[in-house]
Image 1 (cartoon, rainbow, N blue to C red):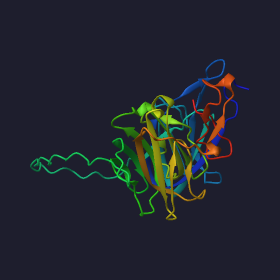
Image 2 (cartoon, rainbow, N blue to C red):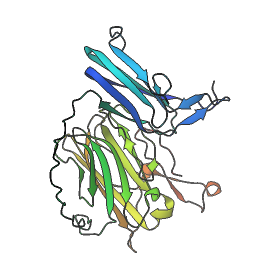
Image 3 (cartoon, rainbow, N blue to C red):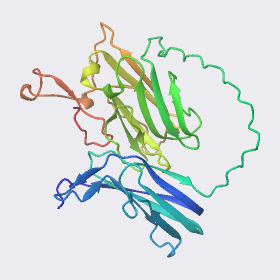
Image 4 (tube, rainbow, N blue to C red):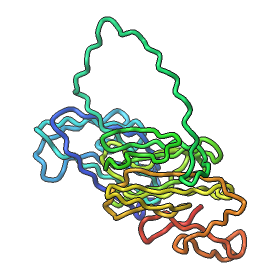
Length: 319
């Protein structure tokens, strides 16, 4: 067995493409070299033809930094030429449980681009945007200003600053990826978030404003969780809700508790508040999310350790 490559996880996503020329490129990856000779790179995505497809229906050409039909590192690319009327392309992801997923983007290379006119239109200066209003809860409590960047089904990349709800609320358009950046108080590295996709794959904890989810694969998220690291949790609480395609609104939840409806109910909007702790604010943790840590393993006897946000019955401990 290759050292460091035990307990591998894999997931498969299929996508139907019509005749044309496509570029599959890596937009975000954190490669790790494993094995005694460091000759295995994970996480990785294999791009191939679906089983049973006619021979030659798709032609692949890997880029100069690629590894055949495997995508492993940032800027890895594969060009796929769909020769038949349409064909099914298969993305197979391989990683260990502790690794983050690779994000890829699929763009079409053979679309016609409009020819610009000889005379350029006059430049009109856009009006200056006014600053966003302060973010407050429904009860009027002031929250830390926050920017949420999302990749939404049929909409693409959308940014929300101090919005009461972030996402396509009520439009039944799924969130496929998101990132959260506090604009005051806690830093982006103080905040951690996790998500589960509709195929059951969990992202693990992500921080620093890095994206959570996937882009260009049409893979909806069905749940998420947010928490603050201990250095910031003493001064702030994190509260959130999720709106799902079924119409259900789950929450409010706090500090790493999984926010999820039914397993196949797609997430369409998120409500996120980072709230300064009030002097009389005593947090009551859910028994399912905390355990009593023995004195030998904690800073003080009887200290509580947060468990989560795993969406399965197997929960990981907070760092």
